[in-house]
Image (cartoon, rainbow, N blue to C red; front, side, top):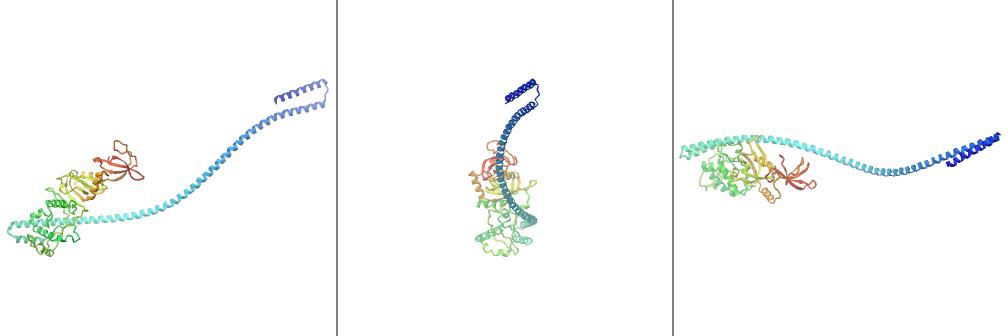
Length: 506
């Protein structure tokens, strides 16, 4: 096209030159031809400009086509994005509906929880009221107990005073007997004076059987009591535990009675009196005189004289009151007995097993020790230990303590102490069977939450992490100060991997 335009321009120029030459040659101005030439020149110029514009238009057309294609592609992409946006809108709408449903459910649950919380708060308020009432009742009970203890101490002091008076009167009676050797009448008169001055007291058993099964033993029992009443003063001092004399029981009598009862029935150690082994020169404690007495009249005693005539001795009964002991009490195995003795190095005298789940039992007693003399035997459960020489005094209940705690408390005892014990043969046998069958290693069982991480340091040690739940089954594993524990499954609450961990003090 450019060549054509160039050739056309050149041809036009050539024609104009030829015409100018002709005009020059002719030298005749021709206005009409000049006008015609001007018109042709204008036409040629317009043709030249139209070609250029045509090129420009063609170029613009091409660009427009290209931009149209780009716009079409862009329209397709926008349509695809619009379809994807519609899909996302539908998805978001569905999620919105689900979220609204969950929100409504959560609102309903929140209302229910609010109602439950209101009910629980009301129950807690009621429990707090009951707790306050229980605290008030406990305080009243403690105040009453304190008053009863004060009254008991006053009565004990009164019993001590009466016992001292009885001892003085008996001393006077012996002095009179020694001064007047042939004077049974004087002895009877002195005894009448003693009885008229102060009523004689006799210790009775704490529990009396309500049934009539012991009625057949009445005559033999009363004849034995009659023999005790006619015994000499020296015999009363030696066997005062079985006699009806107001003299305090001697140490030999206490041990003899405990030994005989244990030989007859090893499970018959539960009696209410406090037994004490006093060394020579030891003083009498207030808690050692927890005795019970009974007074009956001589008229009641006269009804049993017919059954007592077979006795080899007789007794002059005055019209004043005469003490007679009750029938033997029935033995109760579940009753707690308090034993007072010299517990020097107590853990060397006895060995203990058990734990907080089963209780603390005596498993071994050293022959010849003070515990052996007090007739402590394997199978006896220790309920409480009281050791006053320490400051502050040691008084602890061992019923729900672990074996480690019990051993630590008993190790502190080194002197005169009080042990509250009872016979629990069934529990001891079950514990021994479980130990022999290796079902357990002790009587301990409780759960703890670990508050630190521990790595496994050796064989048998348990690796733990913070907040793990452990089931402790032995607080003195193999005699060492470490605990034997199991990991607990948080879903089934069953024991899993066993091992040893340091105790609380370590």
